[in-house]
Picture 1: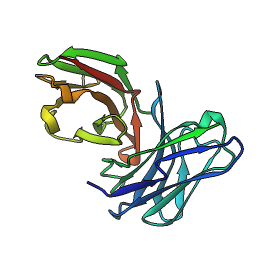
Picture 2: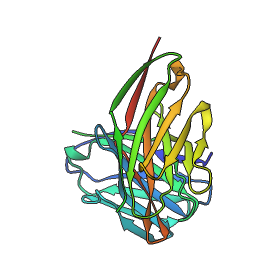
Picture 3: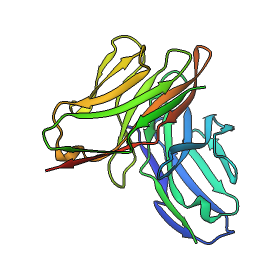
Picture 4: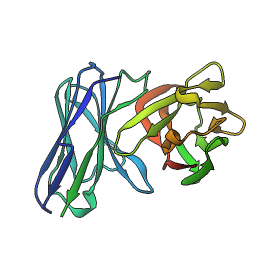
Length: 113
Length: 117
């Protein structure tokens, strides 16, 4: 299994504060993704990266930004957290565009109060 | 554009009974299809995938799925449910652009499987 570590695993933050979630992988996978999981919605893609400094928006990108300065790290930032961003966030990686089998981290439970 | 629909947000079976979780997809090009399982408080784990070739795909833990192009379906089955199968299951399709993958997965809403003793 791909080594994917998310940090922190749990976080409670206040509305209006910035929050950064970190994803670290040890598999040298080119693609990295941030998803959010909410009841009734499954997993929705927030942002993804197809290489260092190459990122693109997913279907629910408003209020989020990402950065990837190294192959192994993919950061998700909530610029000004809102209660609607309370969710479980998953990082995933895949080898390349052809092999899109995704490997997932354990998730980060974020609560915005 | 591709999409995935999982029929039934909750499925309940008795231990030892057949498990059938339904997934239908929409795609104008041959899809890559996946089933993932999520145990409580964990990330998703790949159960099986279909890319090309044999339409009946076998996965881990005794699960299998059959790609049926005519029905645009990729239903997940297991002959005999075990208590440890209780989890949430997600069907996904690889987003395609023309004949190429974009590198993104599109997920269904998930089906929670309950296994009763």
